[in-house]
Amino acid sequence: MSLELVYYGHPALRIKGSLIENIDHHIISLAQEMIQTMYDYDGCGLAAHQVGRSIRLAVIDVLTAMKDRPSRAWRDGEPVTIESITPLVLINPEIIPLGNKTSYDLEGCLSIPEVTAKVYRPARVKIRYQSLDGKRLEIEAEGLLARAAMHEVDHLNGILFIDHLSPEERQEHEIVLKKLQQTQQLL
Ligand SMILES: [Zn+2]
Image 1 (cartoon, rainbow, N blue to C red):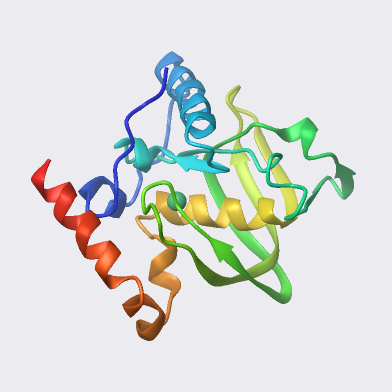
Image 2 (image 1 turned 60 degrees about the vertical axis):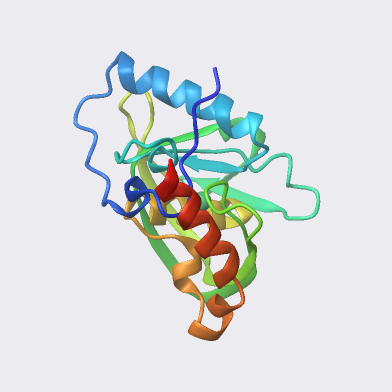
């Protein structure tokens, strides 16, 4: 079942997500429905905020975009294939940037349709999270996977990718953003 998405202007997108204390069957089925929704909308990531739930849960699948936007990942210092960690469910995730390298690449968001922009992000990060079975895990990531994880963790803190743009860059998207906001207010 596909869940209903919320769009720019919806208050759920601006709330700091609460920690998930108990990974019960509600959380497990929400994660499964979010994965399905991400596929239905051809997204490479989705945060609970985007389906109107401000809790610290996100899902990621960067496989389809892998051809032109590669990702690399490591667990305990050993490389792991992206296939083996996809779809990735992140509960209570934290991002720890590694090194000083940055990457500047395009982002979009299912909650902000028709807007894409380049955003600076750390190139390599450690992602600390809990899996659906409650295990505390860490992976290191580069490429689109790292970018998607940072984009989703931003959502969990009420931050959108357009918040990273300069005022001039943001101005270019103002008309589309205003329209989205107005539609959201009419609902
Ligand atoms: Zn997004």
